[in-house]
Every structure is written in structure tokens, then in C-alpha cells.
Image (tube, rainbow, N blue to C red):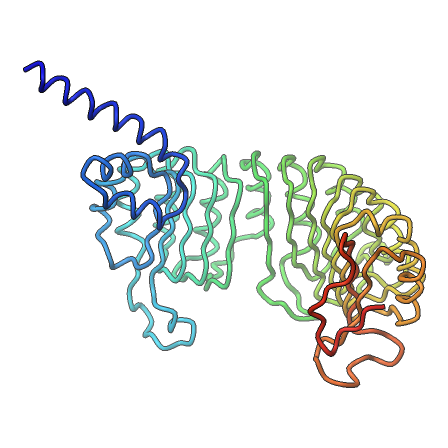
Length: 398
């Protein structure tokens, strides 16, 4: 009897040690290998796994997963094969999220993250999810279908700790839910939101899309903890950008794309002059914005902590570029494509900042790709070891 108790005690000690070690093991492949060593390691690995990845939703039954892994906080599930991207599967083929959600709603009450790819998700699924996980924080849907704007509205209104809602290449039915109210609900309920990405359904010029400065203003009123914004819209105002910068003290990433190129502030008719209020901004991406050099001048002079700057299709020229000479060497990189900077203007920067690597190149990799005096792309970055050695033919280091 004594020997039996001693043997049980040794097993318990070993299991406790294993559990304390395995909590630091993050690789799925390593964890799978650990679970195959013996029954003791199998139990310890299952008990300490917080992230579950299902590469094929039909490879294992949901109940088997929830019975084995009891302390899961994050679930990733992939459904249809890759051929689904090419329209080679019939509609309603399968890969339904419903059976997985039904099992998780019972077993994983403390679930925080759900990432789905190529899955069929219904509005009822989204509603059940919103009501089943009180500490839910992150929903990512990639290439999914079957749900509508109404289902998304339930998520943002009920998941009060939501931090990330990311929709990528999904088929979302528009059931005429007011997106401004989709966004006011976010501001009112998702106080801990850290990142938001908003895409317009119609990503074309001169389209009358629902995404505008009004939505950005709605978000800025309530989500004061935001650190990253990606916002695609048809129109914008300086007032909305100013309100955003003032209301987001921790904002470090702001990516704005206005589809109607070079359109000014649609209320005041003034140029879009981002930058004056972004003192803490570290990353800024802008596309098709501004109608003069003054916008970039505000950015380079006002965003004193800026580390990464990406600009595409904006009419900023050499004077705007030169306004950042005092700051470029403190930045990680500057990328400007299809703007109005000249090769000579870039060469002037290279001459005045000899320790900065200045590259100009053609985006099409074809001779004659430069647009007259204007370079297709300017890429500047600081480097302790000087210019890179793997330069291709279409890249010129000044």
C-alpha cells in the first residue's frame, strides 16, 4: 500500500512538473509530439493546451476535441479545401460552423478568440457566439459565407470586451442594417477595442458607399483604447481625422484609403491635411489623399514619433519630401509609390543624408517604367550596414 501511494505521488509530481513546463510550449507541432510520448504526457499536454488548431473541420468530431482539451481559450478552424477560392465547389457544400459552435458553447465558456477560414457561418451562429462567451475578444473570418450585416450587428452590440473584428474576403449579405448604427454600437459597447478594420463594399471611385467620416467619428466617441485603425472609405473630413487623433491617445497605426482620389474635405472643400495632431503616431499609410504638398508637410513636421510611412497615389512632390529631412534618419522606412517625387529630388535627399539608403525603382520591372521625371517608387530606410547586396536590375540605389 505504501509503495502504491509512493508511486502515485511520483506520478503526480511528474505531471505537475510537466504542466508547468508545457504552458511555455507554443508550437503545435512540438505539442503534438509531446502528446505521443506516453499517457501521462498525453494528459498533461491536453490539460495545458489553450489554443486549438483544426486544419480540416471534418478530420475530427467537435465532441472529441472538447472532451480532450478542457481549458481552451482560442480556436482556429479551416473548412473547405483551397479549390473553394476558384469556385470549384458547389454552393452549400458544407464546412458548417454550427456543430463546432454548439460543442464549444457548452465546453469553452471562457473562450476568447475564434478564427475561421473557408467556413459556412450563419447569423444564428454569430448570435449564439455573442451570447455564449462572456469574455470573448477576437473574431476573424476569412473567406467565409452565410452571414449578414445583421449577424455582425449582434456581435458588436453583445460582445462588450471585443478587441478585434476582422473580415477578409467574406461574402456578407446586406440586409439593410444601418452601418452607422453598426459602428455607433461598437463605440457604445466595445470599450476595450484595440484594433478596427473597416472596408467599403464598393471599392470604386465615385461610388456612393456607406463608409465615410461619420463612421469614423462614431468610433472615436467611444473606443478610446484603439491603437490601430485601417479605414477604407469614399469620403473623409479633416474634422473627423482631428477628432480621431484627439480621442485616441494610444493610437500608433492609422491606415486611411479614400477611393475617390485627391478628393478634398467634402464638407469644407479643403485639402486633407492629416498629421498635425498625430504626435504619438508610429505607422501611417495613406492612399489617394491630398491635393498639394501641404498634407505630407504636416505629417512629417507634426508626427514626431513616426517610424513607418507608406504613401500611394498621392500628389506629393519634392518640396513635401524635403520637409522631412530632419526626421528621415529617425524612421524605419519611407515608401512612396506613384507620387510626384523626381529622381533629382530623391538624389538630393541621398546627398544630404549619406547614411540613409535611398532606392528608386520601377514597379513593373520593365525598362522605361519611370514616368518621365517622376519615379514610380521611392524606398528609403536606415541601415547600419549600408545598401543591400541583392539589388535587382530595376532597382537603383542613389
